[in-house]
Image 1 (tube, protein in one colour):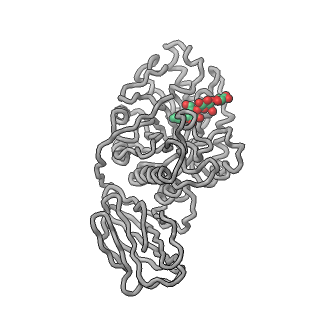
Image 2: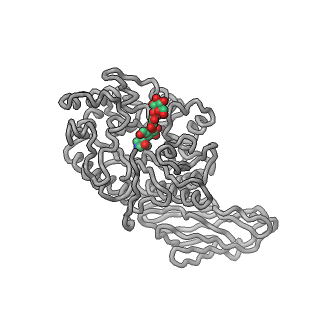
Image 3: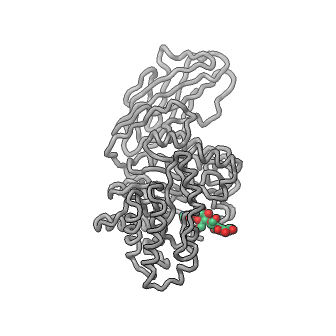
Length: 453
Ligand code: G3I
């Protein structure tokens, strides 16, 4: 099994966005990840696998929380053409019909891959493999025609240094096999968006440069490619700092980008520090996607640690997903939720007793270069408070330009807003709020934490 090396990436470049991003006001903080993503014009999905579908509590969350599903295994060659010319779709059809009954879109994964194909493919004479590959793509993409929004047409064709992986397809067909697979997929399903999918291409580096060059060449030659899938099997604390810039450069070539297999693994056991880091990492990935219009959605590679592939492949590592093994939400879930919703939930436990308060930050609307936000201040104490101060640090160079119902002081990224003369008094369990206009370039993530005193 492949090791996923950490990437060391240089500084993030600031990128001006070409188009305004509207951030709709989602009334319910308890809306699902899928609903919040849809309100931002994107999907938030999960992989699943057929054996898990007997687990009713698991299926209940899979069916309600996400608006997209990827079959983690059963569309692969091993399952769909186990013997040459004999196609088998029962298991994949089960996942597709579950998704359809839940109004979820489906990503097709995957048509041509160096792994999880049946042994007979290795015995096909080299001169016949192109025909065999085309036949496979034609049958599988044809069977699911109209039922999948994307196909991962070719998966993991590059090595870390940017050279082509010497798979059976590369060795026996040559460089042209990728373009040929895309052409066959387009002919079989003209409605699905066709993706190249790989890992360790989330940041800028030799491997993503090679994929970039291929996409550029395909665009110039009229090869039908619509998207690039960045798998994003990431390591705790190692979200590439150039991720947003990388997504942006692919978008600028005229292809969509999807985050297709997101998980963020840690050395076990979990602890609070690691969970907090993981939440920050998930938030960073979601914000990188939200900042680029052509980043169309994010899929976690299953949603619960109960069914993650990580522990079996990386012994001693795991806890990579936003739900734990008992299907409870982890801090990563809250971070994803709040990033999609454009809010910050207080990260410190609400103080009890006299004098405590919490603050909740919400982006009301956003346009190129500017945004409006409001902050709700809640007195969590048992008696009235007469003054309050809310503090946060911007994470991406934003500035406050105008505040109402509060008095602002800023120092670099650090912002403090105190009550105005008329709204310092808040009764026990009461709320007040202030609003502000701000400016941003590149991205406008909600602050990672916000405090009230
Ligand atoms: O099908 C056999 C079954 O007959 C047997 O009883 C069982 C016993 O272990 O194994 C089954 O095969 C397993 C297969 O998943 C289907 O469940 C393999 O052992 C297992 O290694 C395989 O793992 C999958 C892995 O791809 C293979 O590389 C993971 O579930 C799947 O999540 C993973 O997904 C890949 C993406 O497709 C591409 N990107 C990387 C990602 C993680 O490796």
